[in-house]
Length: 346
Image 1: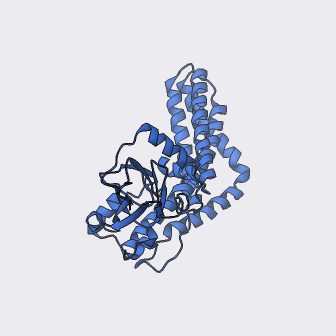
Image 2 (image 1 turned 90 degrees about the horizontal axis):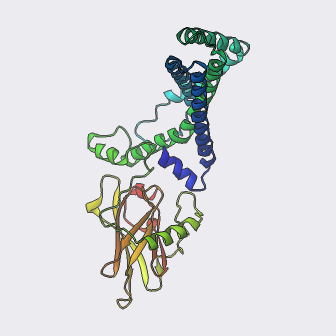
Image 3 (image 1 turned 180 degrees about the vertical axis):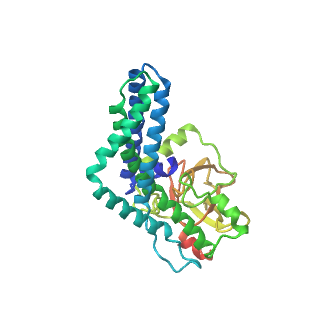
């Protein structure tokens, strides 16, 4: 989930705080696990059997807690009539039932929980003591059971809260783009390209073969400038960041539809920066700034023949920014393009 969580952290996103908590919790679990393992080995005089038992106990408690956290974190879907087949809500219903059941049992058995932990830890400790010289590991195993169940619930809930809604939402977007219903065999290429996982962007986009490697000086300047930009539109991060106009001085930016590069619902687009004055042509390096659903938001192109050309594929419209070596900034909203499929403007 690194790419998705990095996106939440990079922008002013409501889920940013949740991702930070998630990462801090994971670091705390890793550090605590290492500490407990060292204490067990020291107390057992480096008996490897105790380490294996600890791993099994920790993994079981963690998995159980993670399942509970997953059930608690399952998002609710919004009903829509746009699809031929409605969403199957069985998972949500089961989540509601299990959540109520777990809460009910917890309240009923609240007073007996310490006894259950004691019984389980005692049984584990008895086996461990026989394997490793009759040492007493009761305290460590009791603490481990409680810690890993609670940590598993937290991690399972946070992972589900951060990722599952995005995965379901992306699948629904693709269904809507394909006209609803089951995905046809002919559309497998689309799903393969989109790769609906937590490590992929919400909207698939591919840059073509005209990317140029920028000089270190130009890259450093661009990255510094970009880091200082403050997006004002939540779902269109380049909007308003690059002057708001598609023309500046002698330069202008335009986009055209390229049917040869179109793949299913991913439209091929050619983005071009030009100059209307042939005596002052576009030259040197140009930086393009794309939506953050692209793998690389900043793309560099070296101008040639009075133009800098960038070929992309995009699922829906967004704003593109451009900056030239002479500090000229341009901005183009792809929603201003006419005659493209309806889904592109959604």
